[in-house]
Image 1: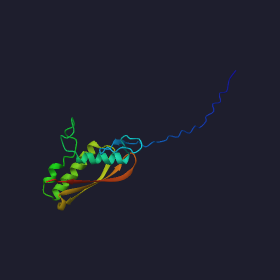
Image 2: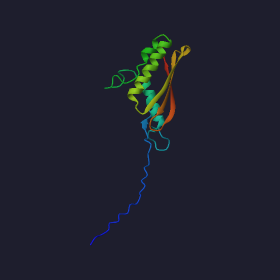
Image 3: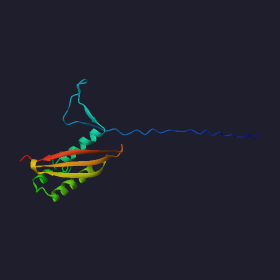
Length: 145
């Protein structure tokens, strides 16, 4: 006796759904949700914008146990407002974001001098890796003295 083994092959189509990774962070201004009464979190691109701003505005030795985290731009605010200082600010911003913010690709950093107000205006153009969305953040560094 011989059995003929007829194996039927059915084509099974498996669809994979790619979920975009969502990001959440706490807003440091601590806004209260009007209905729930608890803190309102920042989500997705707002969380990344908040992180970029915090990294740019943080100086060395401001974070416990992470003394080298930050752009350390306060010392550059008291330098001459020239092209070399703008280049140093741009380089420091690129370095800190390249090391501590892996969720983005930095496309460009623009640093403009606002001498009348003793300030530097920094604009960071970036792309969020998981979303592919271009975005930008503007930060004003101002001297108080």
